Length: 196
Image (cartoon, rainbow, N blue to C red):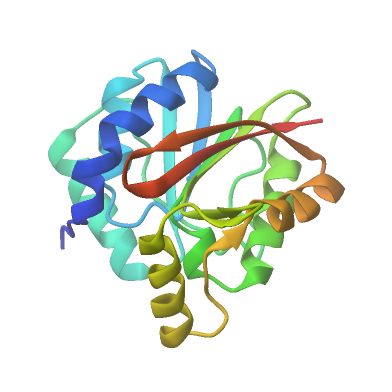
């Protein structure tokens, strides 16, 4: 049941350090597209003041998250919920939203839906944190990201490494502005969006 994602071991500590800077000290954090569940366990353990709510649209991922959760037995790690960003969300409020490695492996409509859905949950001033590979003015941050983009589009033409300017253009109508851009290991970036 438990899945493992090699990237988690490489980025979980760096991500936790950035999340600790922007997430509230208490409250509910909804993680969209929690994948294997390894991040959820790591972040719930590292941020004991918050209730970490993992979600995913894939039943196999939900089973994996549940298995990791059962093993970790953390009081602040909630039961995973099925969540498809392009459908009705199963939660109606949160103090923060986190989305790791989804935007580039989903149709563009999912990015739009992420911001619209997060806007319904978050109060003014609350953060939405996204993480993954991005393009910036001038192109890709590394040749490996350009190659990754090509491989993604070969697997599904609706996927791809997104341009931060294009993401910001759909974030703004939903009520978010980009507050911070943080370079991360392996040519990834953490983007902190603030509900306005």
